Amino acid sequence: MHIDVLTLFPEMFDSPLSHSIVKRAIERKKLSIELIDFREFSQDKHKQVDDYPFGGAPGMVIKPEPIFEAVDFLKEKRKELLEKNKFPLIYLTPQGETYTQQIAEELSKKNYLAFLCGHYKDVDYRVREHLVTREISIGNYVLSGGELPAMIIIDSLARLQEGVLTNIESAYSDSFQGNTLDGPYYTRPREYRGYKVPDVLLSGNHKMIEEWQKSKRKEFTEKVKGVPDV
Image 1 (cartoon, rainbow, N blue to C red):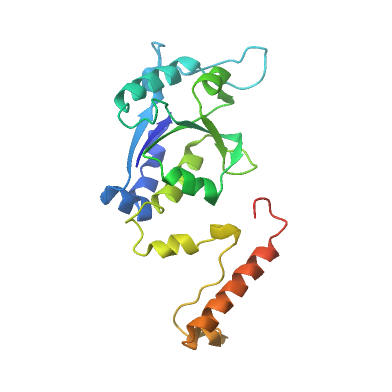
Image 2: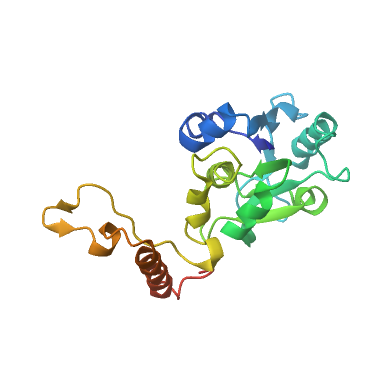
């Protein structure tokens, strides 16, 4: 899988891409990522990418030109990766559909994706009308830009790539797989400060352990029934 990220702040990705599962996915060549600073495509001599909105609203809006130019560049560069010659540009915005594990699974099967990280008030709406193919939100709150949501989504996609996790079953037993939350886990020592690991997990009876885990997943899920998307 290859991912292009269109951003004004590529340096924000240095640490997240250099650690843990994402780093492993890149090292094992299961995932490749290129950061595109679309400021470089600005037609302004000072490389300005934002301007005041028409209509007198507060805030600044990202101009359409640098994004259109960047997408034109990537369409040519990635043409062998495109399905039916369509450029899959995902805009990260609180106005988008809420990101879920099901969407993660869907996107993880793609060969190529591009993420657009907005900033300031918004991007010029012509970008959303004529370039963006999908809009995704990571929750009902507002951030300063799309970089953090992009990092979150990239992490969730990296761990679903075959050969990245040592045990792929770990990914498919996580919360939201099968529309349920995951249950509790314990490790050594068996007892700490008087707090003991449940006896059933030490019993060696795999059927009983499986039933216990299933009941705990149900319990955890019912506990947060009022939470949207659970």
